[in-house]
Amino acid sequence: MHCGMCETHVNDVVRRVEGVKKVTSSHAKGRTEVIAEDGVNTALIKEAIAKQGYGVGRIDTVSYEKRGLFSRKR
Image (cartoon, rainbow, N blue to C red):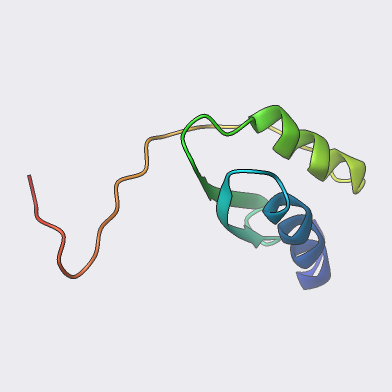
């Protein structure tokens, strides 16, 4: 990604993948972060990005733990 418009293109195609809840991209960091349901098909996300002409490097997955005003520390 080279600019803010690139971020928008990547975000738009990733949002269309089933199970994706939220997407944010940063061309400065060269990174896209996706919040999705458990079991989302990362291959579909990678394919959607590649079809737009962008390269995809490493994909890391971690469990999402919701934190907010009323969440409790464990």
